[in-house]
Structure formats: structure tokens, C-alpha cells
Image (cartoon, rainbow, N blue to C red; front, side, top):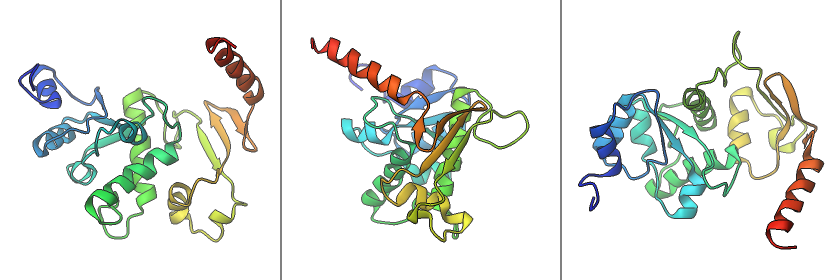
Length: 211
């Protein structure tokens, strides 16, 4: 305010043609009017809940934004965490703590919180990246996440509750396999290059630390 005479999102909308080509990273400091303006613009709110928590940035107005038809994606800005499960879990849990209500992302009776969050993140991520991802359809990239159906955390789950268990059942790894662009990168819980990558990383860190 002291520098620009306006709030950040207010200033941006006054000086740029914000539309669906834009992704506003964080955007946690919003008034009600800015929340509606962002939602109606078609831009993606790029949320990084673990980073925002680490920096004390505050909470995004999720319920109001979803009710206005807003589009969101998730990311990991400062790499405090690189887990989509943790980002989505804390996006929801932060809202529950602030409002003292449950099931914030599920805006209609009978909706699944996990499915609502996961599908919203896929749509927003595809839009923000400008890539045909996040859907099982002709022309989309062959990106797949395969969960461990032997895990007790998924035992006897109906299809509609699997994503709820995936996001909220705890920190036990449930991702068994990952395909990116038609190529398997993770099989049986292990990345195909994880040993080489870990060794190179340890070596670089040691050199930077003067070891």
C-alpha cells in the first residue's frame, strides 16, 4: 500500500489484462472483492499451502473462491514440501481450523472433499502449465498415478472414497507406480534413477558445504 497505493491483487487487475492465461501464485492476501474478481477472471490461483504456512502468509479464502467458480492449482514454491497430498490436505485443514467447520472444499451435500480437491488441482494445473494433462482421454498425456491397493488404508474403500483416504489417511506412502508421458518413472514405490539421483545430490551438498 505504501509503495503502490493499492493492494497487490488490486494493483495487478488495475494494470494488466488478467485472464485465463494467468496464474497468481499464493494470492492469499485477498479482500472479498478481489476474491470474486480473481475467480471471474478465469486465472488460476496457484496455492502452495505448506510454503504459505512456513512463511506465515495466511490462508486463501477457499470456500468463497470455489463458490464464485474460481480455478485453483497447487505447487511447492520454496520446496518446504513436494507432496501434492500434503498441499491439498493442508489446504483443506487450514480452512477447517480457521472456520471451525468440516468439509470446506465439498460445497454441495454428498460431494467428496478428496475428489473435489484432486480434480480441481488437476484442472488448474493443466490450465496453468498449458499442457494436455490431468485427464484420461484421447490427446492427453499418458500420466498415471497408481495407488497401492494392498495398503490397509485403502481396504474395503468404495471408488468414491479412495481419494479421501489417499489425501487424509496419514503419511504412509500410497503411490506405488507413476507414469509420465507414457514412460514409467516409479515402479513398486521406487524411482528408476533414485539411487543415482540421491548419490549425486549428497555429493553436491557435500561440496557446497565444503566437505
